[in-house]
Amino acid sequence: MNSDDEAIRFYAASVFKYKDGAKMQFKSGIWPYLKFVLTEEERRTYANVAPAFIHNTTGYKRIYNLFHTQVKIIHGKKAIKFIRGRPVCLELEPVYEEGESEYVMPWKSDEFQTHRELLDQAIGFSKLAFVRILWPEILPSLPHLKLYNHTGVTLLRRDGEVDLVEVNKFGNVVRTKMTNMTELLNGETSRMFFDNTCLIRRGSLDTRKTLFRLARILGRSVNYNVTNLNCDHVATWVLVGRIAWTTAVFKVDANIQLPTFPGEIDGSVLLEIETQLNL
Image 1 (cartoon, rainbow, N blue to C red):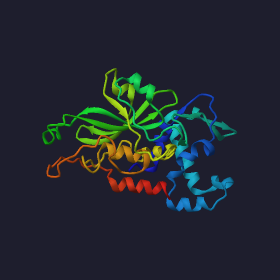
Image 2 (cartoon, rainbow, N blue to C red):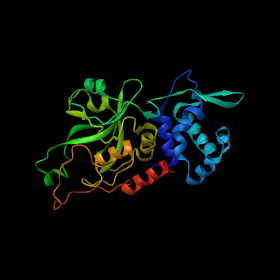
Image 3 (cartoon, one colour):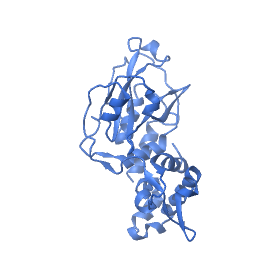
Image 4 (cartoon, rainbow, N blue to C red):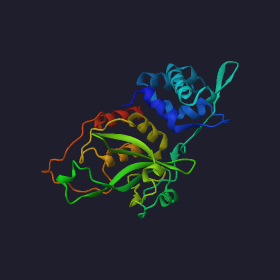
């Protein structure tokens, strides 16, 4: 699991971007995303303080300093507006839509093939299924399944582009990675469809919680197992906090010994992160 420093770096680098002239207040614009980073002890203190005084709490000050440090490293001092030597606002803006999604609902799209069609259909944060070739290590055990529906989470950007977070094999390790769909598809066609049936109700997706889950696992290796923790289990968890295989499920004979890939992130780590979100 990513440390607080690594997690906050994700927010500074990917969730917010520099915009000349922007005026974002940390308390109102940034803090609602970062409050999940509080430790259990910091949360107890935070919960007993009136909103007008939260900026005086130890946890708030710690995260404030961590974020400003990362902003200076990534965007430079130009991204922090100072008056009389004190920072008063940040020249940043959100990359993605904020808060609880009101437009993602239980829904499964028709299939499509091109990047243009993807951009036309993408909504909010969603689960995307697309065709991938089965890994060579697994193919001998499942020779009838040369192609499979790989899944990941798409994040619709405010500029209209779409980013994908996926769990996939990179070299000898299964790892979480974020890629822009323009780069991933690179002009090629691929059979794709959106599947948000793992969502319970309209507006049930809290995008800030989704971003926190990503902040904790992005770039980490996954303790991968086809039947217990595959790309689909992780994608469902990233969206809704539940470890489940809900899209394009295929049956695997219990007697077949499929290869596993050891890694840092397993089910217990995902549950620990979920506990942080529910403190």
